[in-house]
Image 1: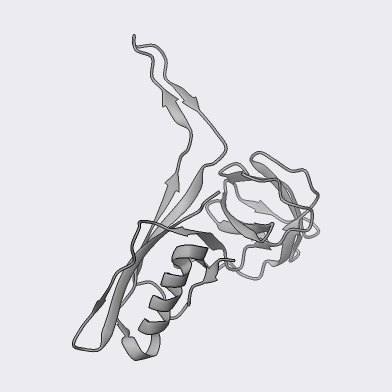
Image 2: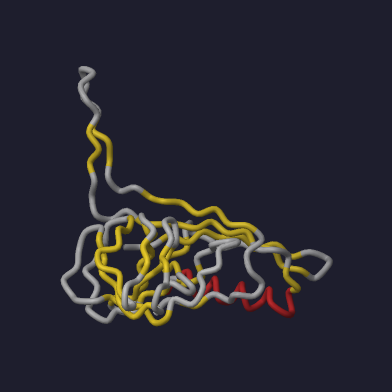
Length: 198
């Protein structure tokens, strides 16, 4: 089970990435380029933490990151300056959904999902991060066929929780080591990268 990383303090800065697992076919004789889309596009996040007092929060962060090396990590996806409002208790409406359209119900009446707003859904105990590709307002608490990116990598079960209030990224820490700095001011500094595995 993935390790939940602390939320305090928050990262001082973060660099989100979209990882495209498709490709571009480039003909050798100057023909038309073709975009090859495949399931598997996903997100990654590189994080720099502010200096933390070692005895207060630094030790906890280091311990959680070491545990996450083997088990994976979960942390909030940053959306600085964006107020998600009160989305209600959104969940996947109906099983067997696939592709780039997702029907969701359980929203607060009149809730608007904005283009560029991130959310995650939980399937099989794992979170999958997505972004809304259009602005839509819930009618009677439901949005039919919300356009999302990337296309779904799994078909979520009916009733799967959708995390709009606080989207989360879940995956493995990037690289083969975790290092941190210790200073004479008794602070700990660290940075890390997290990438969705599926």
